[in-house]
Image (cartoon, rainbow, N blue to C red):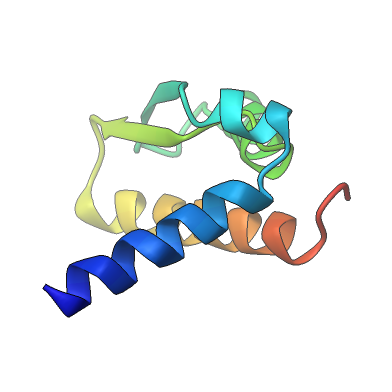
Length: 88
């Protein structure tokens, strides 16, 4: 369909803009706790990996939906900042 052709075209365009390092990063997925308590150092490292383009995804576990939503917002904001400032 036309929509899937457009989606594929956009995906190829996005992928073509990635550096080799970012392409390799897309192969890696991290697991983390959604629960915030006692996770400051781990979250900081996770956000660093996202900012630096070393992660293609994150699996969340063991926390409330509110904690998960907060972490997802942080991850998306960090990824968005990295995308807006490539090489950053």
